[in-house]
Image 1 (cartoon, one colour):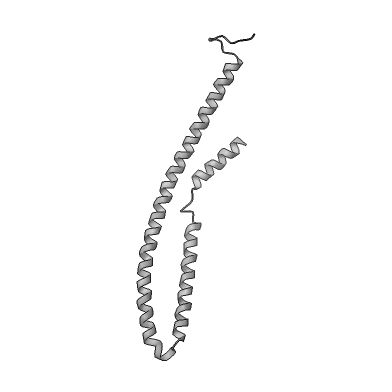
Image 2 (cartoon, one colour):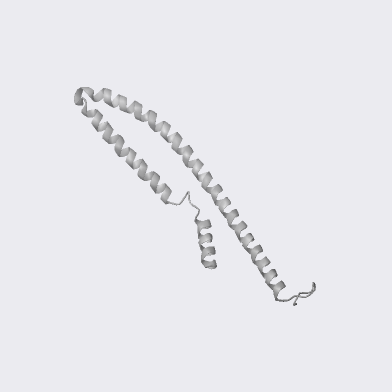
Length: 130
């Protein structure tokens, strides 16, 4: 039998030491990536909360402004235009809604709510392992 003695460093113990080191490095890398993701998620969370606060305040202000200006406009122009003023106002509100939607999409495309550094590091890790 070819048993290893406790003080002997043969090929089996070298393999085990190498695998243990590799596992330790893998878990260190995994922990590093998790920490990076946590940092970026905190930034994204902060940006998302700011965006939501601005959106809520803006929506409330816009709602009240639209209600009162629309009521005033309808009252002032009803005698001249009749029901056509309602069509004009509906078209204007539709255009504004489309503009707001396009603006919100552009904010999302700027990458404020993504994790670019984490995703890049994960891609590098994947490429290195393959």
